[in-house]
Each structure stands twice: as C-alpha cells, then as structure tokens.
Amino acid sequence: MTSTAPAAATPVAPTGTPVIEATGIVAGYLPGVNILRGANLVAHKGELIGIIGPNGAGKSTLLKAIFGQVKVHEGSVTLNGDDITGLKANKLVARGVGFVPQNNNVFPSLTIEENLQMGLYQRPKAYKEQLEFVVGIFAEIGKRLGQRAGSLSGGERQMVAMSRALMMNPEVLLLDEPSAGLSPVRQDEAFIRVSEINNAGVTTIMVEQNARRCLQICDRGYVLDQGRDAYHGTGRELLNDPKVIGLYLGTLGEEH
Image (cartoon, rainbow, N blue to C red; front, side, top):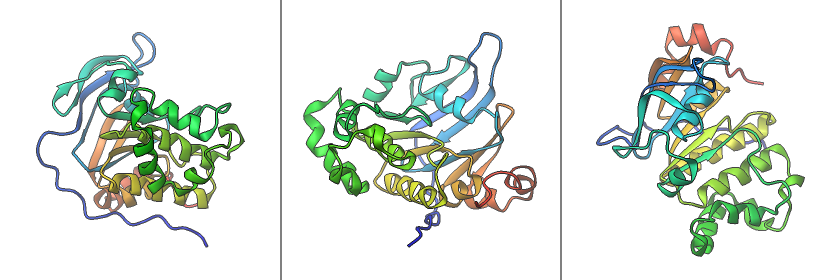
C-alpha cells in the first residue's frame, strides 16, 4: 500500500518568545562571499516550519548558520530569547537544538544501536528512555538495532539520522532535505515521520526541495531567494499565493 503524506494540521498560533529567531542573517562560507544577505526566520514552540526556494537561495546555509556551522557576519540567532549566534554544535545540542544534515548523516561502520548511542553521548544514562521515545516514532529501528548503518538504503539511513538527533530529546530539530534522493514512497514516509516528530512536541524547521509537499504539512513557510526571505506565510497561504506559484511552485516540488 502506498503511503500518503498527511495534510497540514491547523497552524499553531504563534505566541510568546520564539523558540528560534534568526534576524538579519548575513553569512557565507568564504570571506566576502555571503550566501545569506539578511535572512529572517521565526519558529514558535510546537511549530513545523518549512523553508523552500530555488537552488542556491541559501536554504541549507540558513540551517547551518543557526547550527553554528557557517560563520554569521551580521545578524543574530536566539534560542528562547538567549543569543546563540555562532555557538558550536556540541553546545547547541546540549541546549536542545538537533540537526540532521542531508549527506553523510550516519556512521556507516557502526550498527544502528551504536549510531543512536553516539547521539546520546552527552547523556548516556538516558539511553533506555530515549530509545523508547524514538522507537515510538520509528518502529523499524527497534527491530534492527544490530544492523550496520552502511547496509541501509537512503531512506533507512535518513530514519537512523533523525532517530539519532532525537536521542538528545531536542526542543528544536533542524532537517536539511529529509526527502532528498528518495523514491516517491519513501518520500511520503519521510514527510509522515517529520509530522510525527513535530506532533510529539518537537519544534521542527525543515528545508525541502519538494516544495508542494513541504507546504502541505508545515504550519508556516518561508520562501528564500537570493539569500533573503522573499515570502512567508502559512503553508496554505503560500500554496495558494499566485506569485509563489508562478515564481517557485511551477518548477519546485513537482510530483514525481
């Protein structure tokens, strides 16, 4: 039976201090070459935020800037009102921010269980409790703990990568292209899992090339173009916005 991605839930009404707020981010990989040119993003507690846009718009760079992997030259990133701009990954993980990169996101020579243990290296005593939480979302994980990650398919590796990030019980999870390179059925499964993670209470920020599917499940979305947030609104608003449809959805996220 073919899975289908769930429809977006009623958007959460943004209130209070944002969990994550990126303001006026100017950032890049090389001195004097900025991929981001004043990008902004706000995520409130419990929201599922989607980031879409053409190739080279700065989508993945924005996630990496939030997670301290790209130098921020101007602007700031806050977590629950506290400045976390430029903090290293280990400190961000300890403060409740998880990140799943698109590539090289598992340790292929290790078993699934060892990958999960690596995700919890800062809190090893919580392993049993967190494994139960992860298996509640990814039931297949619990049946295959002894299998080496290198023998898994792309979709299965993505499942392990998300599971490992969840082992630290993050408040915020950053996902870079969770459906990239997957078959249509596996793409549907990936979006279902993202929704389940978010429904479990994890504020989720997802970069996606499959723009239509992304906007269908997210509470709010941002369209990045040339390093700036060109449009933002609820997923439904962006799906029905003539400018977004004409400029982006005509070539992005087409059904395969």
